[in-house]
Length: 344
Ligand code: GCU
Image (cartoon, rainbow, N blue to C red; front, side):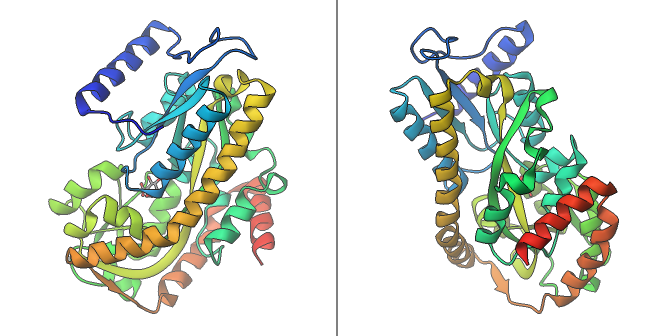
C-alpha cells in the first residue's frame, strides 16, 4: 500500500522497532482478527528496501502489498520502507532474522555472507538476459534447498528479482579495458567474491554500502563503481561519476527474504496468495525494468552523463578467468553447473 510517510515518523518508527526488539516484544501490528490464529490472524508486514520510490522494486513490491491486502480483506499487508529507512541491507538482514522487520530485499552479497553457496547463483557471464535469469533462479528444481538453508537463522528466501546487467561508471573518464582501471578505487559490495570481481575488472576493491557511495564518489574516496542504469539514475551517482562504460559484466540477483516465523504463521490460503503475489511482483518488476532502464539513460544523459558503448570482451575474459577460483566446494560447483546448463 502506498503511504505518505515523513522522515520524522519514519525515524520514530525505527526507534519503536528497535525498542520492541530490545524488549523481546512482538513488533507485529495486527491488522484485524486475533493477530496470532491461523485463519483469523494477520499482520502489517514491514519490508526494508534500499532503493528509492521511483525504482521498479518499490513499485512492484508496493503493488504486491496492495493485492495481498485486498485478497486477505485487510488482514495481511506489506508496507515497503524505501531509502534504507529501516537500515542498509546488512542491518535489514539481521532485523529480518530477529523478527523486528518482516521482509527485506537484499543483494546476493548479503546472503553469501551467511551461506557462501549463494555465490553460485550470481556469477559473471552466465545469463543472456533477465527472463532467462528469472526462469532459472526461481526454479525450485534448480535452487533445491538453497532458499531454505537459512531457516535456522529464521530467514526464508522467497526468490529472486533481477538487478539487470551491471556495468562500470567512473568519475575520471570512460574505460575500455581493465588497464584503464589500474590504481583506481572501485566501490563494490562487501564480499570476497565482489573484491575478486573488482580486481578482475582492473581496479582496487573498496567495499562500502550503497548509501555511502554518492559521498564516496563526491569526496574522491572512490573513483568508480558498478551497477545497473536504474540505480545509477535513482541514486544520482551520474552527478559525481558521469561516464558510464558498458562492461555488462554481470546480470545481478536481488533476493526477497522473509522472517521464517512470520511466513509460518500464515494460513495455507494466505501463504498461497502471498507466494502468488511474489511471482506477480518479480514478473511486474521485470516488465518495468526495460522502460525504467531507458528512462534512467535519458534522465542521466540530460543530467550530464555519457553512456559509452565499448567492446566488453576484455572485461568479460578477465572475469571468466576468476570464476573457477570463486567457486568453493562441490555444492557450489553443482549449483553453478545446474544454472549454466539450464542457461545453455
Ligand atoms: C543494485 C541492487 C541492490 C544492491 C546494489 C549495490 O542496485 O539492486 O540490491 O544493494 O546494487 O550495489 O549495493
